[in-house]
Every structure is written in C-alpha cells, then in structure tokens.
Image (spheres, rainbow, N blue to C red):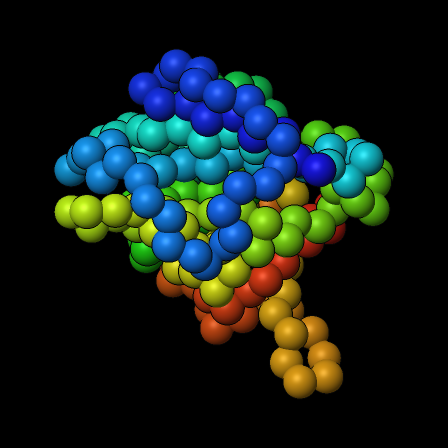
Length: 206
C-alpha cells in the first residue's frame, strides 16, 4: 500500500490510500493545471517495510532547470574541500526532492513535463532496494483532458543520486540491465533504461 499526497503550488490538497486510476488509462483532468512551463513531479520515498510514500507537486520549468544547475555545481565540487554529503543539503529549490535522490525525466537533457524522484529511506532492506516504475504515473494533457501513463518505458534521461544501481527490463527469458554509478548524469538514456520497468539501488545510503 502506498500513501499518496498531492501538492499544487506548495499546498497540500489530499491524502489517500493507494488506488485510483490504472496506469496507462486516460483520466479526465483539469488541463488548466498544465500551464505553459509547468512540470508534474512525483517524489517517492521507498520504505524499509516495502511500502512507499508518494507526493506529487507542480513546479515551473525554471525551477526544474535551476535544480539541475545546482546539482551540476554540487557534483563539480566533489574533488574540492566541500564534502558532497554536505553539498546535498543545499540542493534544490524544492525541499521534497532530495539532492541525494535518483532523478528521472521523460525528455532528454534532464528536461521534460514529468519528473520522478526516487529515494530509499533506509539500508539495508531488500524491499526498499527496488522500485517498480509501473506503480508511478506521469501525465500528459491536451486542451480537453489529461491522460495518465505509467513511468515504465518512459525514462529519457536521468541523474543518479547517492546510490549506484540499475534499470531493468525483461526480455523473453531474462532480465536486461543498465547500470549507473553515484552522481552519474545521463542525458540520453540507453535502450534498457528507456524501456525499464524497474530501478534497483545497489550501494548503501551514505
């Protein structure tokens, strides 16, 4: 079961148990919410008991790119006197998307109308090591309605946080993997990541 919290313009609107629209099905929405320059962000905290807390927020494209620029600056400081663990505390205009999270985008070059942040809250725990992308939705709107799809198969770029890990997709009889290292930026996701159903975290939380 997942707990879902929806935020728009920083205001808490609703808290509900997991359920709702089946990923991949059209869902009537308010297209006026998807204004020019608005990004639909989903933040997921993977819990040690196998559950997940999920928040959705709307941010501006300018805020999204400001955070990308801040993370780039942080990563460039890795070899300086500033420890990266300290630098992560200052990352992000939005405090809900931790600087140590894995960031996924539905367009290339760390851009897109949808963004998914994945963060595991504890280590070690088998349950919190794997995120099923089919459990989380992204949204596209036209002039009349909004449509929800699952994140499975929709990653186009990503930026690893504090953990290494892999994206997984199933072939006929085996699981194909695409690995990433801590703080690795990938502006064009590979074939596996672009079609992935799962994300697995491998290294311990610092």
